[in-house]
Amino acid sequence: MHSRPKMFKKDGRPKATAGIMLYTYSKGKAYILIGREKQDVNDPVSSGKYSEFSGSVELKPNKSSESFLEGSIRELEEETAGTYKLDSEYILENGKACYQRSVNREVMINFVEAPFYTEKDILIRNRNASQVLSHKEKDDFMWIKAEDLLNNHNKESCVDVHDIEGNSICIKLRSFLAEMLKDKKFKHTLQNIINDNKSAK
Image (cartoon, rainbow, N blue to C red; front, side):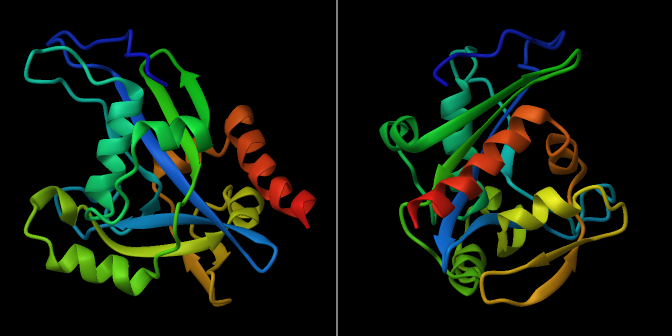
């Protein structure tokens, strides 16, 4: 997780994505926190769709790239409007890293159990109250049953999910998350999170 990307664009920027999938347990079920990309006419592909908290690994002021861990911490803090500020030690102790490398990009997603549960209304309120531009990337949040992602992600129109309050909702997934859900290691890690809570009962 402390490693840095090995693939770079011609201009020197990393060809890599880092992110975090936060999860929690409630009433014997595992739930994943996802956020909706804000409505943006300039980004019709992702606008209004839900995803984990991730983004491109960035260059530092000294022109060296972030590590995957640094990038994932930054993305989570930005996209939850500062609600979740996890340190590296917590992620290393509690995270389950999933690395994927394709011809075009490296991807590292960390599955991390949330240190505390935050209701969606509070996440939205924190987002709306923030004056930081990068805190505005997501405009809605939802804790959804992890099993629903595994069972329904192949649907092209929308995915039927249940939120932590028990409501049934049909949502659209961002293409990045939909593609990650086809990856065997990613699905296996998600299944382990579901099973871990069942075995603890």
